[in-house]
Image (cartoon, rainbow, N blue to C red; front, top):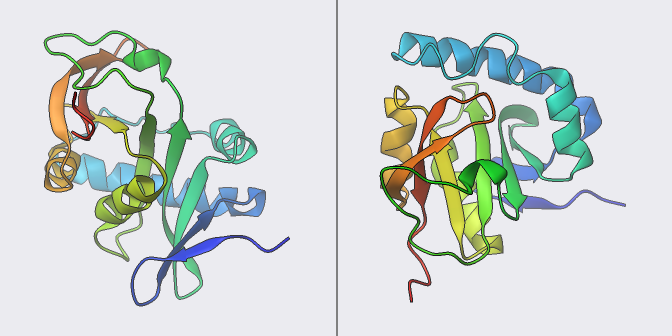
Length: 175
C-alpha cells in the first residue's frame, strides 16, 4: 500500500514515519538536542531522549511523522489524538476548551528546513480542530514558534518525570 504524503511547500513533504526511518530520527534528535543546548535549553531532552524504543512505539501507534526535503528526512513530530494524561491537571492557569483534542509532541529538525513548527501545526489543523502543545520553560525558540503559530499559553503541566512544561492550546471552538 503506498504511503500517504502531503506536500507542504515546494519540496517539503510530510509522511508517516516508517520503522526504517528510526535510525535517521535518532540523528535528527541528536542535532535538535545540540541546538537546544546552544540556544539556552540544555535540560528539556537529555542524551537518551527520545530513545529508540519510544520512537518505535510512536511508529507502532501510527502517529509519528517525518518531514522530507529532496528525499532526505529533515524533521519529525508526533501528532497524537486523544487525552494526554500529563494534560489532565493544569497549574497556574486553565485550558480554554474541555473538548477532545490532539497533541503535537517532539517536533525536531536538522536545521536544513525552516518553519517546521508552522508546517506541523498546519498539517495538524487539517486533521483536528482542537490542538494542544507544550514545551520547556527554557525553550524560547519553541515558545516563540508556537505563539507565532497561533497557540495561547494556558498554564503549567507536569510530565511523567515530574518536570514542568509550559502548556498551550489552539484557541478554537471556544463556547
